[in-house]
Length: 393
Image (cartoon, rainbow, N blue to C red):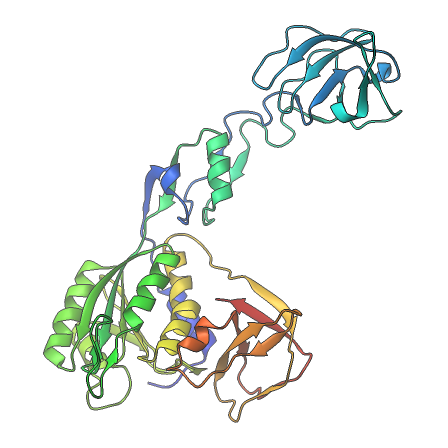
């Protein structure tokens, strides 16, 4: 197959998405899930006019007068008395404002008189009252569907009594690493062997994306073994990630195994650096990615192609945070036939510095990076001071 532009690959991937359905869970378990139904307030917020400070509830027209204290109103206590002329009630933050009062004097702005009355020290004050329903009215939609639920959203649900929440189901994602050179992280590599880092990186990325991952182990360089593992993963998951074995070597079995497993390959090379040998296909039961074996390539392809797909499957349109900052020094590359993803560091003075990067196997470069800058096709240089968009990782 021909090498295709990143934008075309992205369109193919996103157009292949299917939704995983919805489920109802406790709001306490909904962090990082995708909200699938609107959250509607069952009450006004605030539910009454409440004091926003500790002080004295008064009539504003009496602001310069000596004021008699007729009651103390703590939070959670309903006022028993109305405020009349030259009267006030001592009130605590969050307590309901009594009838007749239209402002609250801050306690530190008052003085206690020998008579036991209080007097305001100044001639002007803010009302210091949070009005009923000024934040939310009963029946208002307080959270729209399609958002990833954050801690502050859980607080909103709690405040409106929305204790059962509809969310998108987590896609089930199978993770496979391919290659006889791999050993598991707990093993000591022999000669010509390396530890398998891709699968555990992907499992962490899957968790961060809000999905559910299952690790199927290492598929050795044997077509039958690889086929057996891949077929099982396809039957049990919505999405399957296979890293390694997608290039053009004699032992790169993944493309032929996928065809044998009745996967329709939609592309096998993307014009990006790193990440060119990326394979993507669809099966009746699942979507399949063949990711490059080098860990930086695998990471990049996941973040830029797989993660948006996962989010769409759960009902969310992924829009990663990007920051516009100036380059601290000039960056150049020799070739510009592919879109480049450049690991960068954000410096203390708010500028962007390319990270030390030795190629797609240099995974520690990403650990010391703050984000990725994308360099389009045909562009070889970013000048010092040029504004770039940094996608945080």
